[in-house]
Length: 213
Length: 217
Image 1 (cartoon, chains in turn orange, purple):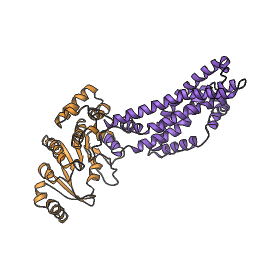
Image 2 (tube, rainbow over the protein chains, first blue to last red; image 1 turned 180 degrees about the horizontal axis):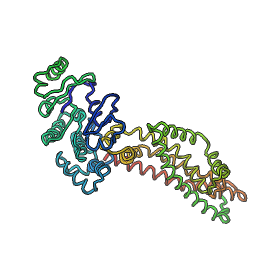
Image 3 (cartoon, each protein chain N blue to C red; image 1 turned 135 degrees about the vertical axis):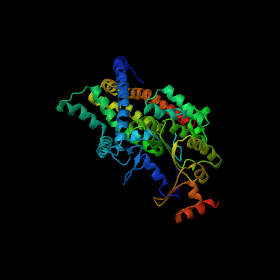
Image 4 (cartoon, chains in turn blue, red; image 1 turned 180 degrees about the vertical axis):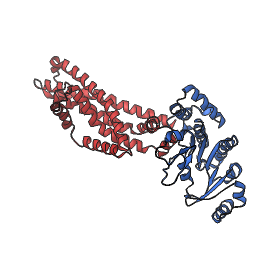
């Protein structure tokens, strides 16, 4: 699922409501059988099943790549250090940088950092992965390597909610596209319909501006 | 310069030197623990905790240390709480210093990018785990210099023990000053404090440099 829309349209806010990084002021939201808006919901339990990748990576700068990935599995899931490190190495291999395990985040390029962040999210074996503009802070030539990882994940059947401005990615990978503006969902449809046959006026305007260049 | 007072008071000074070190070490550890707890209270969203933290900081850093020590030493016994001089000194110094440390720690915590908290919490870590593993290590890296200042102040402030006959370095000096010329005594005593504070300064500088290197690795 890909969420598209102009800046300030509420895409990130919607995404952040899913794991309650943003408080829900009104209405109901159920994720994985958890009532997110309910005050009694155990947010830590809810969040264990939801991985999140941020625009600015948010890796822990004082920890090595490996420690970044094993922190939550060892502390939240109570997995032994050895086993957590083995799993971490599997995911680092999956995102293509196992040789960086003992590096610190500041020694990595933006693209590498974001791939570590994805591995960190996956290491908790979540049911859903949230991506909040994962390529917006990257140099153009590093966008590809991150999108490749995400594409593979989608192919393997991971449930993903992605806020992005990468139209090519949305078109190719998404099962569904949501278009938002001014805090409202204006359209929710298959990508083929969305890009070739948009119904909403605002959608048409948005696409014509974006696809021109 | 006549240092002959040492012939008579050598043991007093050795005892005082050890007492000052003991009180300082205990107070230093306690003030660090208290300072972190109060700092977390200060930024808590739970209002009563925030109020308590603020009141604590404003009260203890804005009243003289002498009054606080006298209160613990002379005041508490009348309430039925009788603490040893060592306890009064350690506790008093720790509480006083922790109010300054709390402010430094709070500033450090607030200077850590809020994305760090979001990343840790979204991975399922609870608030305390996030503070302990993610936020505080980064905060401490930033606040090493002001923390060092507080520790040095603490060692020097321990001289207040002399006022309650606490048997520290300064108390030994007061004893010796009764019979001997005070100038050599005070120069000697200042030297003893420097013997404690200069290594502390160097240690703080060393830690600051080492941690800075680690961050840019």
